[in-house]
Structure formats: structure tokens, C-alpha cells
Image (cartoon, rainbow, N blue to C red; front, side):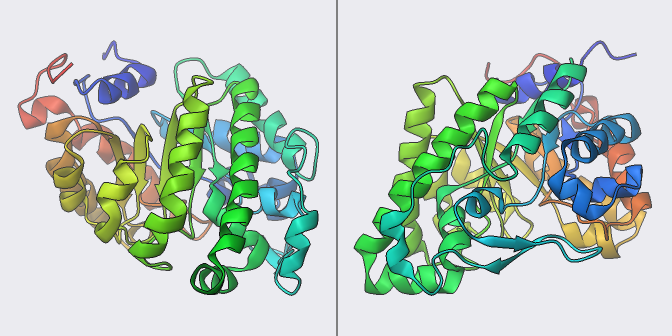
Length: 353
């Protein structure tokens, strides 16, 4: 039996060394209602269904990391965007706070991230899980400054603003960066690690020029500010980031979770082990593929990235309730089996240190 605990495997990846196998986990948010039978609306609005889902996933899949993945709207909702919870569907924005009245930005201020909106139930869930889990790292999933801005203004409006009135966008990002910092401090107080989703910040939505001019500076400011508080930042960007890989790696983050649209091979080449790479088994494979397809994707990721260390195997993004349970279970099993470093001729404790 292995003497390595999940946190030992994760630490080894961050130290650029090797434990017994590649650390692995599926990113599970609303999918966990399949394990608990919780109502989807309750999952998004109450602490216990969110916490119970992660604890059920821990029992079912024995992941090396737990991330309390909820929706990406809590920050914007607390600032005035209206959110709805259609029966049996993932939550969505009904009205953007700044969509029709951009001048309202002058009257917006950062929310109380400990007490406003749905924040309290989220921190309660984080505390519930962190208090019951010892050997598995537990992380939060917060929303990055650009995506908070998109959830306040609307993504199309925000892109148009970046081209037509850049000072407005910078003012908006000044506000949302402060919200992101405040949320990270609250996560630290809740006893969980910090990761941000920037779902709206990939080249699938914005140009590399917009990223470099507007988003990269606030990512750098965010990481610099949090380093002062001894908070390390993991970043997830949905979609395609190949043209701006170097820029993202250069923001000061410690780990980067990449979507399946992004080339893992190119990411490994560009990164050169500067940050830990997490990914990138396609979500569509979990939803539409077979266990054999899952195996093929695990092999691809492990063969490409595991020999370098600084790699954690994961789904490319959050798995929705539409993911096939048999595929999620098979990923959890096969990742542990195929990801053993001895299969790659790598000895435990090796690496760059």
C-alpha cells in the first residue's frame, strides 16, 4: 500500500519532484448532485448541498484535490446583477448590473464578501469541508477580475468598451480586482486555497491584445497583492489560450488549469515548469465518450506532461450533471493506475527539487 497521501502527491508536483503517481482529480461542481440527489437550486444557494457533494465525491472517487466549485456569478450578483435558477438547470444571469446603464459604475462599490448575497453559504460550505478533510488539499473557486466585469457589464459590451472607451474598462477592473482580492482573503480565513476562474478571458472570447492590455496587468496586480498575504494563486481559463500562454504564465500564478481547446503539448514547451499545469481531459469526453475514450485522453495527458513533473491530471473544466457517472468513475480509477510514475520509468523523489 502506498504511503503517499494526496497532499504529498500535490506537494511533489509543486516541488517539481515525483511521488508514487501523478496527482489527479475531476473538477466537480454541480455534477455532485448526481451523488447526493440534491436539488440543483439548493446546490447553488445553500451550504450543506455544496459541502455534501464534495464529501460524497471524496468517498466515491478518492481525488487528490477537492475544489468547491459552484457557479461563477456570486460576485456579480452581490454587486447588482440579477441571477435566476431555472428548474433543473445551471444558474444564469437574468440582467447584467451595468448592461443598460454603464454610468452606474460610478455608484458601485465592492460588496461585503463575507456577508452579502450568497457569499455566506459558500464560506460555510468551505469551512464544513475543510474541517472534515485532513490529507486532501481543499480549494475554493473564485471569479477573476475580467470575468466579474463581464458578469456585470456583459461580455460583448465589455469587449466593445475595451476598444472604444478603455479608461472605463480600467476603472471597472480596478473595482473587480479589489473584489477578487477581498474574496481570496475570505477564502484564506475559511481555511481553503485560492483558485480563480477567468471563463471570459481566453482567446475564444477576447484577442491576445485585449488580454495583454487589460487582463494581464490586473492578474499581475492580483497575484502581487495576494503574495503579500502569503496566498498562492491558481488560475483556470476556459477555452483557447495558445497565443497568450507566455503572458498567462508570466502573471505570478503558481498553477494554471487549462481547457481542452488549449494545447497541452505547447503549454509544456512554453511553460518550462515555471508553473504547475493542471488539465486537460475534455469535458465532452466525460459527457459523450466511452471509458475507452477516457483512457485515451488520460494516456495523452500523462504521456505528454507527467515526465516533467509540475503536472496535475484533471478534467479540462467543470463537469456538469450531464457527465456520465461511469466515465467519471473510470477516470478516477484509470488515472491512478496509468499515472504511476514507475510506468514512466520515474523514481519517487526524483526531479528538479
